[in-house]
Length: 162
Image (cartoon, rainbow, N blue to C red):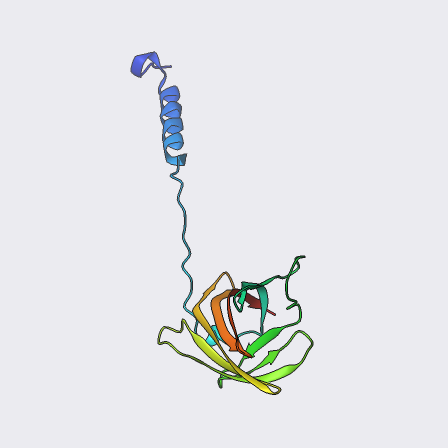
């Protein structure tokens, strides 16, 4: 067999060159893909009934609100609570005991990052605002604030399809 570069056979040289090429090509730079939040729109908000996955916040000046679906140590129970937004900007709020109350809603900003909805509870009507509204990984995320019987409530919530 003929000798090539530095006394190596042509076949050995080609194999070594191929191995070098494979090792250089197979080295990859580690990269991170950052997934942006999706802008909430009519199709997303009306696609499902939405139940709470997690909510944390404050009622009044010193009462903590905390709920995580399936966890222990929750301060409130939202296991059966959910909300439905219809395309005609009506909907239904279902409380934890199964009581249903009608609501009306609308986006209040041009970028759909805020929703205000008014729930007609028996004997009490409350307007609730979800601000910094976003949709990511199939979940609605928002800041919620409202006043109920003179008590201000401010919380951060995550809702998932029911």
